[in-house]
Length: 219
Image 1 (spheres, rainbow, N blue to C red):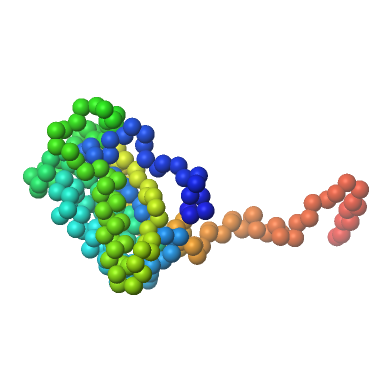
Image 2 (cartoon, rainbow, N blue to C red):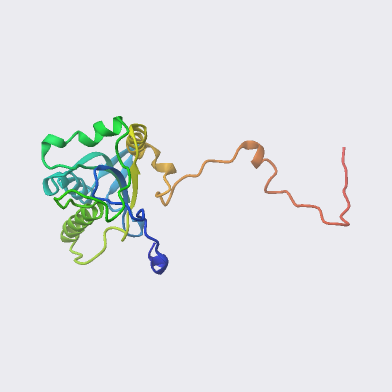
């Protein structure tokens, strides 16, 4: 949040190598969580011009980063959820490596900085997200004639996907996002669930007795 800029904490895991092979769940929110990417209609996301820009740029990530594969993702009115898979090798020959390893429980063991790494320098998750945010911001500002304006919040949220169960649960969460928009914490007009009936009856008229008050019983 802009008002907490000077108290911002890093959202990354300390000493974790974000260029290593693995799957990552990322969430990126628009600046001030303004709904600029479209709207939810009947439980489905309807992209506007800016949402289409985001869709195009995300799908093009593997063209700019050959060691990266995109998985399930969703564009919401004011935020984005997606899964990225970073591979140890380059090209289409290794596209399923991380997912297959995940099924065997061999993925996302943290690699401390300074440990042995592959000779070829790989792109980090932060570099990939920075490129995505830069390209979408440049294109959206060109459309709306607002050069230099922020489209996204400064930071982003990430989760290292540990195994296949984790992967499938996150995939389902992403797919369910549009139909659960009314309850989404990122929805500024979200509808909170009503309290149980027993908790509502008489609650607003209840005044606690003070010492010395007289109680009048009626039949």
